Length: 126
Image (cartoon, rainbow, N blue to C red; front, side, top):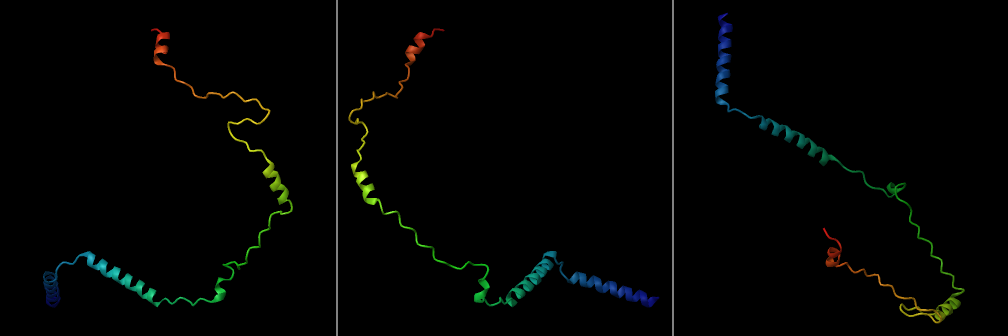
């Protein structure tokens, strides 16, 4: 009995001495260690990754084969001379000029003058 009491007393005394000697540690230190462990494992896996070499046949099914577009068709050139002659024979229409044999249409005035305030106030009495 005395022996077990002495052992408990020594263990308690040793624990108190260790608590007094060790400074208090914060949980952030432990978190940093964990982050470093995870980061180290991650970096180790990234460094160990070796991509497979590319082969020319890897693109098959993902990329279409190139084919040059067909040449465009030329316009119908059979009647160009007649079209050019008809264009040259057309009468030129200018704004403000009347064609021969037509009566000149009277020009309309689209500008609306605002009513004077004096006329409006003279007509309406309160």
